Length: 272
Figure 1 (cartoon, rainbow, N blue to C red):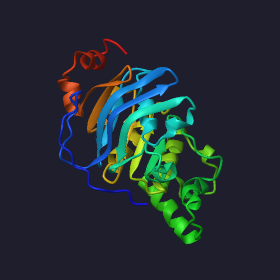
Figure 2: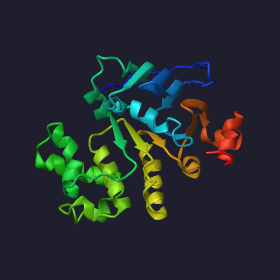
Figure 3: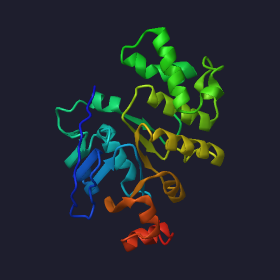
């Protein structure tokens, strides 16, 4: 399903977020979200741009993961959630009742904090999504599996082990298998929620290098507690605090000359 349209905007929201003259993949405006009576996200205005890595940083409980899960509507799995405002993906409001969540999740992949491969072979993990979408031809599935594993830079490590259970791999390899599984459905956007927090430094470096390669073809949004990671791999960074976007700009600017004292206090370790 092709949901792509050209969305170019150039304006500044009330919170100071400026929209540039380039393609916007997601455009969140005046988003509020409640868990029951708890106001978790407040007046979020946030454009996310095509083929960039957008990092979301902030202390625990500030709304980072909640916001990420609104982008594929996974947050709706919590019964008490309700929202106001708009989140436009490629120009269409995903919160509109007519927008089918299945179509959204085909275009928007998700990689979680802890590697979560299925208890299946490496091959079947990658082929799972295409099979769900009706692909049964073995030759085509073989091609998708190889392409996806190559895309996740793990093909050479597992090409002779495709029948092995994915649980037999190391944690870092499992996370790259999960990324390959995401690539197999040919998403437009990849959401990553703390994708390296459970990994050792060497595996973290491999995933970070992979993210840099993937942004050539995909738009990536990553939630991370690791500010050094955000500085290394992202093009833009949003600082969340108490459910609000305090500051959002290109990463170099945010870390070198933040405009808001709360941002400066956070990135210099004064709180959080």
